Image (cartoon, rainbow, N blue to C red; front, top):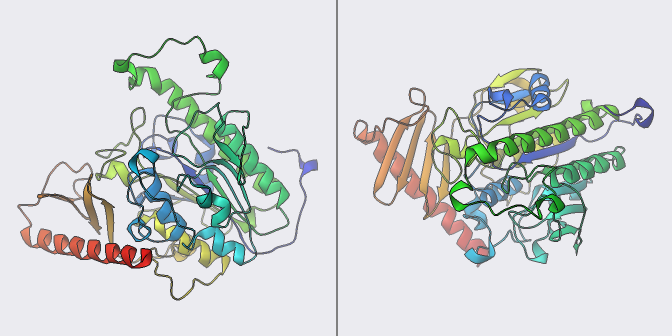
Length: 423
């Protein structure tokens, strides 16, 4: 906790908004979800806020999830369906897209982002060109936790010393301190717990004399799990520092914080009790931990089982900030404001997870889940089969037919929208 002499009061203003994104964190990793790693600060968030049991990232991989949450739209509409990487020739997020920071900045907010971007490596796609006043971090999808030659400070490439998780936290805390008298939007985009599995002790100097890890041992849980645990604990400590800073400056009553993961875990992590993980359309790939925090606005310790999604963050943020969304902007997300503040029922809707052609398309309709890839179809009743073990495609042909038709219709709609906007 920060010493009280360094904290001060300030007058009420528009609500502050902080989004904290973890990378490759599984549903069964944190102690909030009875996982194997003790995360006391996430537990604090949950005990003082709302925990989601059925929140989904828009994709089971990084870039599409980030595109959807930043725009409030299915990632297909912005033509980001796969991981953005130079060897895949995948496009980045165009600066013509309306993003959370761009709209909030127009509404008078100070905007800052620290950490992993992964929505385009061209300079024109730098977060600064998407509405952020400040950016310190990296544009790609993965980098060394200690070697930051590919980091940026704004539009300038700059080597920054330190451990990535600590740097992201430090910059986030400074941003809050600097803008405590302004309305601000802060996006804390952690690299943790994405590979490479490196702890604060795994410095470049220490690794100089390390022997190469045999290929057969690279994904050994025995080798990487202890590191993964420390990486998650360090991120949790950083979240604690952000909470402490918000409370220190008497901002808690006016600050909304939302935490989630961009997709399920891979390798060392746990997606229990679900099947699959990152790169999968099974629940373990996209059902992720999520916590909303806002003392005196959100009932402390409440749990919601409503089905929600990353693209719902955009309209929620605009609702909280009381900033209108342009009428000509097609959004797919739905505001969670009444769910958060009143625990109101969330509207039923059909949700889609498209990762074509690699994984096909998945669809969620209340308790029903369908996965379609090529000529193979799977149908699951999640109320009675949360681990997706019993394929009911033969038992419910009429339901399967309707869901397949809905998937085809959706694919046509979002692909036509993307094509139209590119033209």
